[in-house]
Length: 382
Image 1: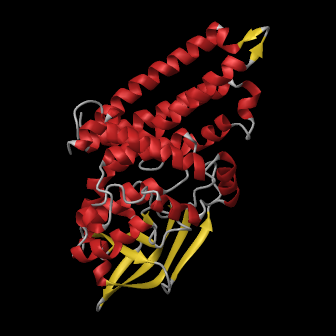
Image 2: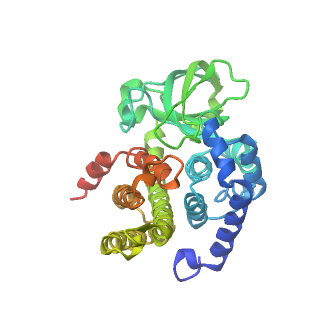
C-alpha cells in the first residue's frame, strides 16, 4: 500500500473506474428494476462479475484470486451503493465468506472452494440467524452431529443473504450443545445435489427487494467431516468474532456510499425544482439542511477512512468497528430521511430512487448486529 489516502492510490482509482464502467454497462436502472421485481439478482450477472474480475478480490493468487485487500472490497461496495445496486451479494461472498476459508480453512478446503468462488462456479452465503437466534449467536439451535466420516445437520436458518442463489453455505451450528460458545462450529454445505437441504421462501422485505434473502432448511443433511471449517470442532464462535469487525466496517462503507448517493440526488433535485417562484436550493432552509447533511457526511467519511486505514494495518478492534457500524448506519438513516423531505411528495413515490433508498436504509441498523448490540459492545470498553 502506498502513502496517502487509501482511495487516492492510483491502482484503486483505476479499479473504481473499471467497476463503474462494468456496472453502468451490465446493471443499468432498467435491469436492476427487473431484479427487484424478480426478487433476485440474475445468476448470469454473477458470472459476468466473475469474468470482470469482481469476485475473489482479496483471495490469494495461489487459489486463483486477485490478491487485493480491503481497499478493493470497499471500492466495489462504494461503486455498488453509488448506483443503488446494494442488493448484489458479491461483497458478502468476497469479504465475509471467503476470508473465513482463507484464514481458517485447511489447505484442502482452500483448494476445493476458493478457486470456484473466484470463477463464480460457487456462490457463497453464511447461515447464522435462526427464527429464535439473531444477534445472540450462542443461541443457535442448528445441530451438526458427528456420524462416522460425516456430520449430520438439522436445523433452520432465516434472513440468509444470497439464500436462493448460493451453493456453498457456511452453516453456524452447535457441535456440542452443552459447551456454550465453545460448542459452536462452522460447517460448509455444498448444496448442489445435497439430500435434505431445502430452500424456503425468498422473503418479502421492506426494502432490498432484489436481494434473495431466504429461509434455509436442513433435515438430516449429511456432509463430509472435511467440511468442518479448520478441521477442529468448537472454533466457530472465535472465528466469527475475529471476522465480525470487517463485516461491520463493510456496513459502514455501504452507509457512506448511500449517503453520497442521497446527497447527489437531492442536490440535483433542489437545483431544478421550483416553488414559490424560485429554485428550492435558494431557500435558506434547504441550504441549511443540506449544509448539516454535508457536514455529517464529511465527518462520517473521515471516520470511515480512518477505520479502513486501521484495518489495513490489522488494527481494527471490535469496539471501533462497532462504533463505525453504529454511527454510519444511524447517520445514513438521518441523512436519507432529510433528503427525502426535500423531495416533498415526490420523495414518497416508489418510483423515485430516494424512496427506494429510504426503504433500503432501514435494515442497515439491524443486520450485522443491531444498533443496540453495537452500544452494548462499545460500552464494554468504557
